[in-house]
Length: 91
Image (cartoon, rainbow, N blue to C red; front, side):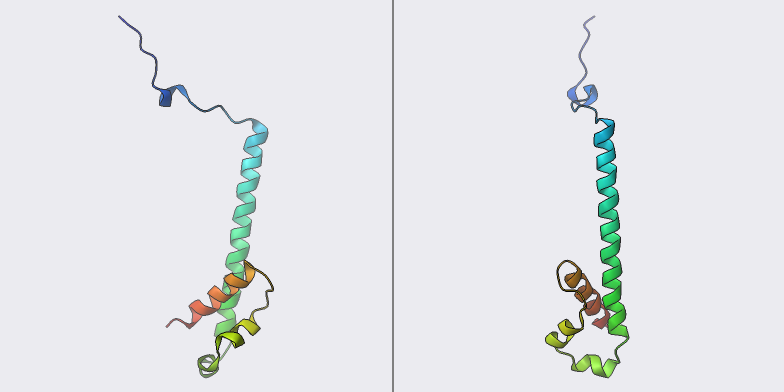
């Protein structure tokens, strides 16, 4: 009877992560999760800003006026706030 070696998938073709590398990966994931949450709150702020403005006033706003309401100076915050504002305008 011949013994066969295990296929590469079962042998474990990649080395094990060190504890430090694993901790770095977890910290990176936590940072990206907290950044995603922060950006979602900024988008919600844009949505809320649109809802604080009366419907008749919203109809009169052009793109420049909407941009002037945006409290953020740089991306990605500026983009996310605008996305929230725009999503509130969709009926």
